Amino acid sequence: MKKITESFFNKEISGLDINKGLERYDSDKKIYLKLLRSYAVNVGAMLGDIENVSEETLANYKIKVHSIKGISLDIFAQKIGNDAKALEEAAKVNDFEFINKNNPIFIEAARKLVIDIEDMISSCMGKNI
Image (cartoon, rainbow, N blue to C red; front, side, top):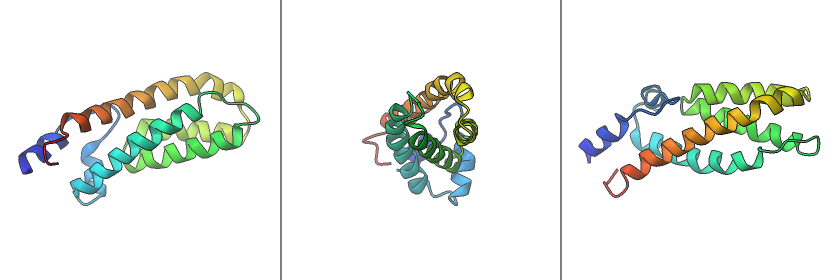
């Protein structure tokens, strides 16, 4: 189990600092892995909810990007977390121009991160991690 776990956490994902994530959780790999799984499931589900933003959906949008910001920063996906923060701030002041310009880029980057995390997890499934 130790070798598989070590090889799992030695993988690299663009936009995710696994080493800092592990440090935050006192090198507890099981906790960090659970957080990564939760991230992939929850953020993956939220991305579809924020694709189309309007005045009617702005309050929900702000809540979703706030949530994505928090969990992204928790796992040390800094770029996604910071981009979500910028979108959250734009939503607070109804800056639809900023949101419409940056939201599609954000969603694409966040989806890539979710897919990369899912791929990393599935590559090690069944290996007693």
